[in-house]
Length: 268
Image 1 (cartoon, rainbow, N blue to C red):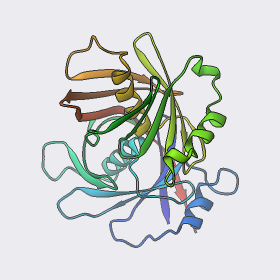
Image 2: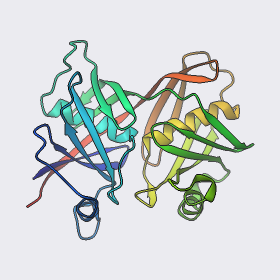
Image 3: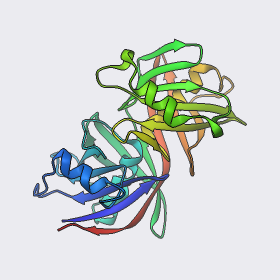
């Protein structure tokens, strides 16, 4: 079984072509493969499959084997993987159309350079955002996210505070990813503790989208005109989130950022 390793802003994944449906992995096998000490190491696994009416399907699994959710960085990586497999958009307009756990998505390549690509990924509309306090929000951008605005993000205890927030009773029984945000110089700086990985990751795509939307509602970008374009800084990469907002709904939500091929992995 062959996997290709990609990372999106440092969020790393193992991807396999499963259009013939021959690959079946249980949670224990996924966890073993993703283990960074005794396996190959990854934040998650994705299988690219076939889906009638779409260019492909995306099945995403966290490193603990849990699934049933969207991954924004993974979405960009699977588009880059599709491109590297020679899959071309069937519609002929340069836009890939695929199905993930949260429904259909569209994506396109912005640029390519060597092993790296920049991908523009359409995300789901967001119509429900719960403001839990002045500096806390909860919303679903394909995965459930808690967002907290803090000071001193660089030295913030993301793992300790993230683990506590992820397991709070108000988010039970599913839990939520925990994002800690500091807006500085017109940039949304984000660090995320991801459930399923149970640690801080270098980036979380759905968390970046959630943090950008929360920053808008927090009042940090009142001066912007629609479509709103918000720059975001993850741990090692810069990304961009854009959206339109009207009648309480965020539409045409787009996440733009890098997707880089690392190499091949062979499993016996």
